[in-house]
Image (cartoon, rainbow, N blue to C red; front, side, top):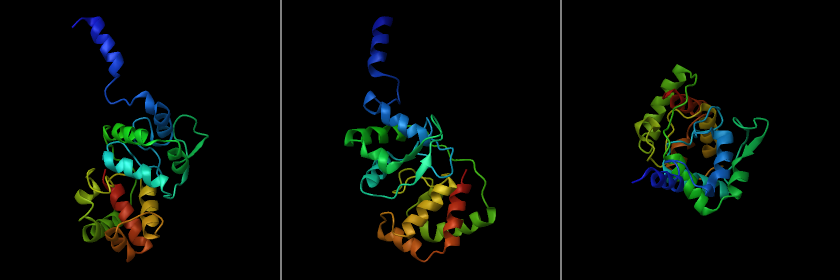
Length: 199
């Protein structure tokens, strides 16, 4: 095939791993908080790169259904601005949600390098093995699990999520409700430290 034809084809297809113009604007919005490659640099914002495609889509749809959404400062672009997931998803259609999910699922997951309390992490590991490993296998490191990846997610995000589940603010299945119902605040902190320690 001649060089001109190859060039034309590459322009039509676009670079691999890059979403279409259908989500160019939403991708910039995502990048403002989650980073250009979907890898978080902020303790309250999760990494979304490398998560299971179905999980990303489901999470976006739960915001449409009223899941609590914290307002956070942008970490890239105009860092004086703030973002809220409830506001972000209002402007997305089903095709865009599916395309965003596929885009970020195709990117590599990178665990956050963050400080953690070793004693609390050890206690959290025991809690995980006793109550969480059945559904969150590999110490919470398997993207295809129902919860996707917990290991190496930002500690602040992990703790907030656990607190929301325990408080009934986020939709949870009966196993999740049962696993967290008897845990203390210290237990939730220990679990967050354990997942944060998986670097």
